[in-house]
Image (cartoon, rainbow, N blue to C red):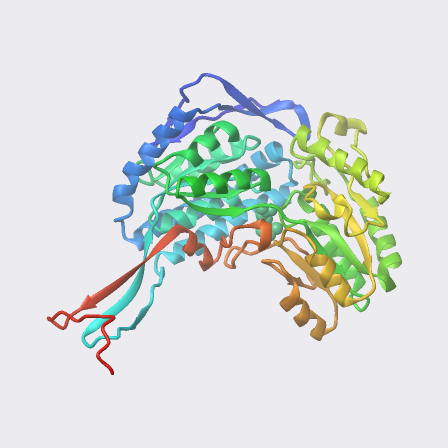
Length: 498
Ligand code: UN1
């Protein structure tokens, strides 16, 4: 057993204890006997301290030229490269994903660093003609202020990076409140930010429980912006609180992503996409494929192929190089997935493979669920509508392209989507008609890249996008500037034309 890491808060460039001595633990989901880290149960007073530090830091950070701010981000990118393996090992133990995926998660953070570092020399505004002679008009981006960033456990490095890096390059200061399940990942990540030498108060970390530290941050009157990735229920609370307290808010919530496989698709390719999209990261991505919409002409063949391929997947600890599928994050989530299987059976879905908690050998010590295919699912069943967030995929049969698109769209969510077809006309029609923030043609629903907008329509989000240059609209305010060099008063909105 490795000694658990003792995590502390990071406020005003110091590692500090929380006011309350209570601590909580994160455990290895592949072997719940192992404590990975202990972390403080921060209260409103700790949040107050972090917000005060971030406010103080903001006064000078906003005035640091953006290219100089970007150099810190670049340094974080280099340090992430240096500590990549160490971070990936911690992540595999604390969150459970296979090492190859954990390295990919850190790499996403590295890519995000170098992309956002480049933004320091862009942050473009516009210039445009004025109605008046000898008058100049332009727009500039200005920071929003103190940003509370509330992040989930499923991408414990990449998602904090997505939020912190653009926020910082735009001149904001940040308080990260990471998920309770992954405090060690957050601590290691913030150690890297500390090593990069950001000025005091620019980067802050507050551990704790969502209902306590998270809630206090969202309600805090001196927080200007909340960026949240997580469940729809918590997102609704965040949205309403931010509405009431007049904060800017960016939400990234649930998904019920589907992959369509048409009768003309390359079935081997679609199969690999389905397996990776549904069972990669144990189905615990908000982009995971949780519905497979199959054309009736290939449905029997494709589900047989899928069953065969799924039967070969090996469950195990993330740090074991033979593992294809890691554990579910914790007992609560494991039981939630199991309950959905009860619901599926009651609703009349057929369990083609899997469907149970895995308990053989070493697996009994962890939170493992067998990769599961549900057949004969109809669009109205709860398992076809609700986000499960586990290795469970629901198969729905359709008779036409139009029906496939209609069923894909028949969900309150709209994050990711995919269609496998060789017909270029259908591919373009799908691109146009699918209601989702992301559509893949002949690729799985997972695997978004950091330089493109990430986010969803309908109940997945609130109209914002993360990543790419679109995220700048979250972390900056537009300022419109008019410069009148005529030397005389020019009155706008006066019309002398008769
Ligand atoms: C998430 O699950 O919240 O597109 C993020 C993907 C990853 C990010 C997933 N790049 O699958």
